[in-house]
Length: 127
Image (tube, rainbow, N blue to C red):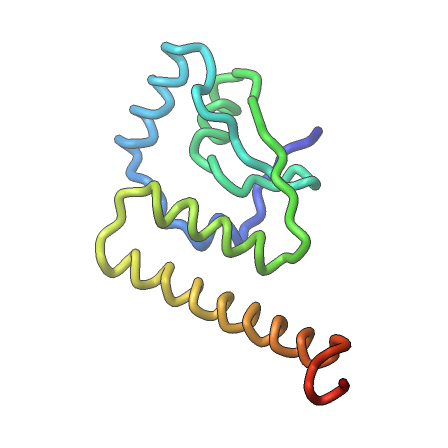
């Protein structure tokens, strides 16, 4: 599988400092691989592990990955935000910024659920 990065997802994330990246890279080099696999979608787009992916490429280390599938592009984007929001050391502004993106996704998903439920048999409007 060819693994790649989607700029939209990468742009959602606050970049790590060069010092933190070099520390991660050194850790991966010393361990000769990853403890935690990179999570990709069925098309090989990185959802979680952008920095680990970059470090492995620079080191020439085989990339370990796990495929996670989603039925909906918004669900996938929500995963990218939530997994990074819960894992990374972000300041309050950065957390709020990710929360703003997440709020928009949640609103769109709620709207879809509401529209879908209105047309199901048994709904009071359609009997």
